[in-house]
Image 1 (cartoon, rainbow, N blue to C red):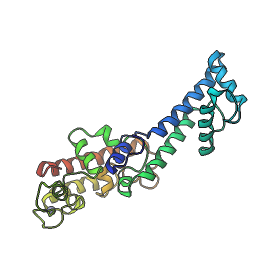
Image 2 (image 1 turned 135 degrees about the vertical axis):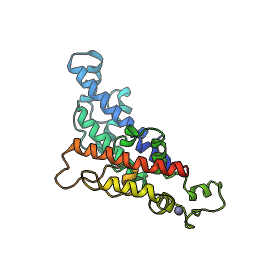
Image 3 (image 1 turned 60 degrees about the vertical axis):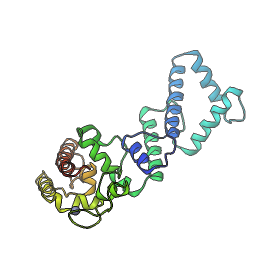
Image 4 (image 1 turned 90 degrees about the vertical axis):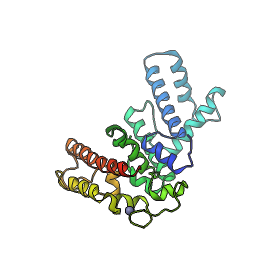
Amino acid sequence: MGLPRSASAVGALWHCDVPSLPTTKLTLMLQCISRAYVSASKGNALPQLLVNDLRSVASDTKGPFYCRPFLHELNEIKKKHPEVTSFPMSKASIKAISEKVHKSEWVAQSTVKHRRAKPSVGVSAFFKRDAKPTLCIRSRICFGVALTPQRHHLYKHTPTPLCSSCGVVGDLDHVLFHCKLYAFARGKCESELQQLYFPVQLTREVIYGVPPPAPRGFSDERAFLSDMHARCLKATSNFINTINGINRL
Ligand SMILES: [Zn+2]
């Protein structure tokens, strides 16, 4: 799980909000040290020993031998994250550092396509809101493995990557936005999105399940935006389910 190389594996971990092993270790270190400080302040003997050692030793080349590897790691953390200055740290501070590291790792490893599908940290909303089989279809679209004519050809299921109805390459853009086979379902979805409280365009992002951009002055209306997002998920789930009913995605 440390540094997955497959693009779809990176995308899957990001959509499920699973941090890498180094990020998980960093979070646990900060939580454990903070808890030790809180416990020591309540008079517990063992945490007091650890905290006293940490307070008395500035360098990882000094101090009791059992502390050195730990101090070395702690000093490395402080070098990389200057915001780690004192303990105990609040839960919010630890969460902020973990999310920052998680996101920067994701940006370093992911492709632009993956970032379009999920631009921020947290579990993707459609994971919680979509029922099966929509969840599976939308996941395949997000991870770039939906069964388009082009993908079927790649898997050697068909002799050509062309769409049998339109005679052009049947990639995901063609299926979602241009293929005449799905024109009726697409038109219905576009119409539903246009008739919401504020009109939403049918884009890749909306099909990926990304919340629609908030209109000016509505950015703080969380309940309203959440309802709008749910309606967009509903409209696009009908669309991708219809495509899947005609040709399995
Ligand atoms: Zn077509």
